[in-house]
View 1: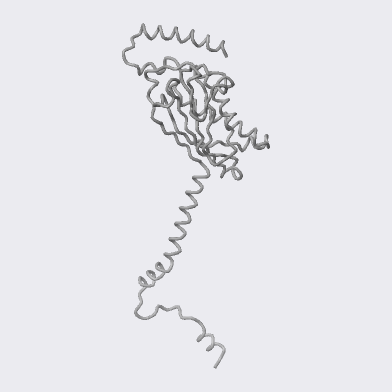
View 2 (view 1 turned 120 degrees about the vertical axis):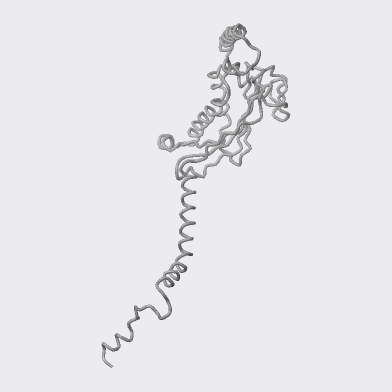
Length: 251
């Protein structure tokens, strides 16, 4: 047998087998490729979902029960020690509490000195009867997630904030919110390698997010109070201005 003949025998035929149409062959090819196409689609969807989670982070704000600010207008506010209910030991409770204290002044409240509060605070029973304060700001950190820290220099924090009536802190809240925020510290991490400094920066940003949701003390919330005419509103504005001045002098 010649070499050409051997080649003709070994060469696979390119003709379509008898009884199988072009359409049937196309269908077979599709059936062969479909499992891989499905896997590729699932992988692409998973990658897209993961990129979205890692890129944007979770930003959630959820109001909690509390409507007492419509009828009760607190002035003096005690910032309770921060409660850490997360699994992390890195939560900067003192820095967060200090930032909340400073921010309350900007929201026109008069926060009590933290040392004064600590001397009279009973965390076990949450007893504030010795404080003689209008309201108590209670913040609980429920999650401190640093899964994005190494890759993106970011943390995702969930916390709950409530403003409680000073005379009955165990009762219904005057105001409340649950929020989840991503705090990006990639640039700051280059300047401050000490994580203690970075967590303080994170605490200040989280406090600003909380206080942004807390209604400002003053006339803004009075528009929702029924039965107040213009003359009563003017009297309140005058009294509020005097209270703000005296409150700041006492700090």
